[in-house]
Length: 205
Image 1: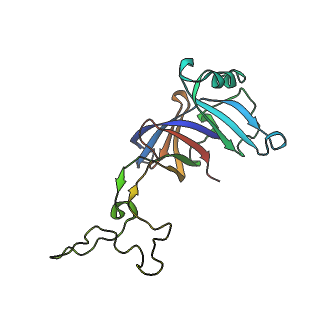
Image 2: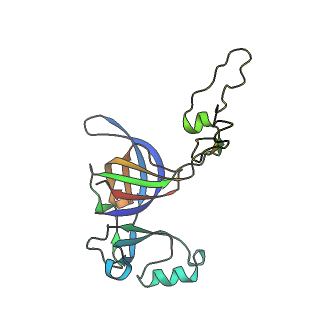
Image 3: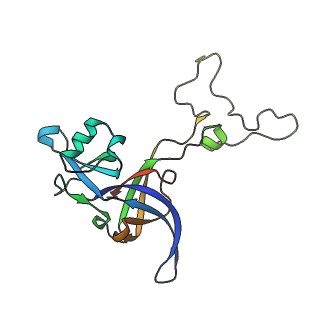
């Protein structure tokens, strides 16, 4: 079961051989060196650790440089573990987009775009109140609890607050094309996060 780290480049559109127009997200995925293998006997779980995003050595800590040096990997900005994805991989190997195939379905995880402080209408799709003359409840959330009993607001009430900027996983994305020479994956539809953000790509089982 392959897995990769990548960078969201942006969206575009491509024409298929049958003339259909596909809206795709371009992801620069890999190459990702394998920097560690977690085993159940030693670590209590099974996982593979991949690195992505080559940077200057001064951009990472001395401890990070020492960890990457054990796998003969250059300085990398991002290190991430993928559980149950190790397979036959060994420390020092390089994982590229060739691990995926055209037509395969994957799931992509990333941090969604932050939209700041939003009200309940935009954040939770609440219905608005009446807009007739004298209405004071057009976009207000309405009642959030009784006054006498229980004389408090229950935890978990959907209210206004920060919207976005949290981890989101988009499942069932089809790989429209794989470009190994450019380390690119073309995924049908949208992918979480802004342009330039780091995403995790796994097979969607």
